[in-house]
Image (cartoon, rainbow, N blue to C red; front, side):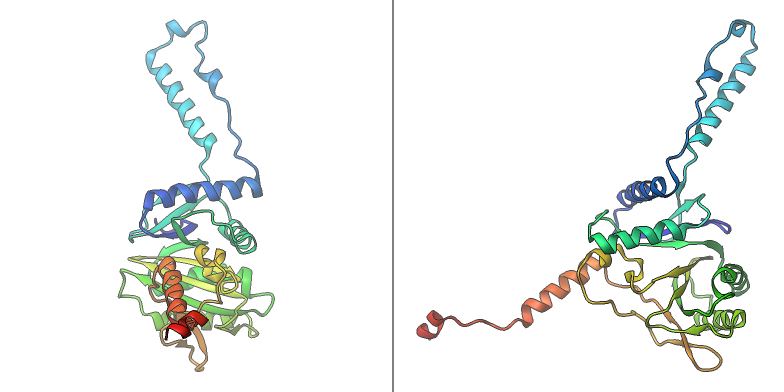
Amino acid sequence: MKPGHRGILVTCNGHVRDCVRDSYRILNEYADELYGPVETTRCEEENQPDGGSDEEDISVKLQKEAEAAGKKRNAASFRFQSVESGAMNCLFIQTVLPDPNEIVVKLMRDLSATKKHKSRFILRMLPIQAVCRANLKDIMDVVGRLGDQYFLKEPKTYAIVFNRRLNNDLSRDDVIRELADLITSKNAGNKANLKNPELAVIVEVIKGLCCIGILPEYYPLRKYNVVELVAARDPPSSFATEPAKAKDGKVVGETVNEQPEPEEQIKDAAAGEKANSPKITTPSDEASG
């Protein structure tokens, strides 16, 4: 992962290879549905020997074969490619698609509607529209550029969701406050709303890099948590520490704590329900008593 990339940030439950495989399968399935299958170019003609092949210099042959192989790779034109994120159980699937929001939002809406699991290994899939270096200036520049698409024309409600891994240098409060001022400067009608914002500005810091996305329906789509989406449960809590405030004192953002694994949350909830359920006494029990 490096500055300039865009893609999908995927968290998993430890089965990294299985998570990568499922991510490729799901994303390619939805990409084919939205944009059509990738067209492949036939290169066999370039590999076929012609009448003068015996007299051709061997270096020319090798060059043609290398060019043909390169064209085959380009023809496959991988829409998605897994790259190192720098954090455990956290993958970055780089994409050549212009807007990763489109494909991931459609996936999340489908999961919410059908309640059908598509993977046993994927926990969350966050579309990332830009990767930059983890410093305040670069983050402001990226959000400023992306924000023109979302916050200029019409007033929007928003929340800033800040999370970091393996980085203690970047001030969470400074980032949230400066971004809140930036968003307000684009349109005075933009208002912070942590409970049900129209847009969530995601700031995911991993070591020296920062992944940024501006996502719709963040809380209705259970924070893009695929396990939560397919489970029939109450709306999730925000998992926030003390909220961050802008210069005018308004609450504008939250910090996401590391959460227990969703599977563990479900087991704990089930155990709690069993422990708290009332004991049913039958007539035979009363007679024996």
